[in-house]
Length: 102
Image 1: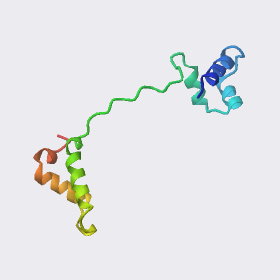
Image 2: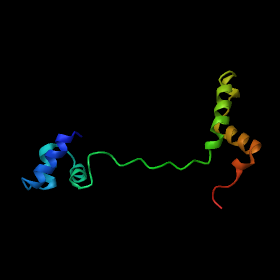
Image 3: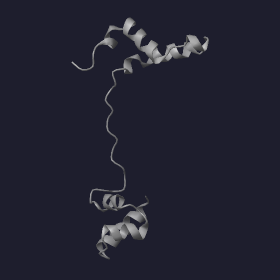
Image 4: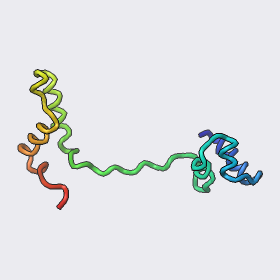
């Protein structure tokens, strides 16, 4: 949403004393969008993205990628399935087979 639209929403609310529902109907936006831009801390920018937690599989992604790239050179029936990737990870890496829920 442009800065001019945000200013228009705030002007309609403060100067013309329109309700959020009336502003939404007049401008064609949803009510939740109008409320979002009426909040004083809202500058129109989205909230900062949350920091991602590392997944348990992250350390193994390069290894799995190598296997799948190598699979492109073999007959399709011999390629890794999801089950086969899991079984191979459990067999080759003990850290992978540990339970995630104690």
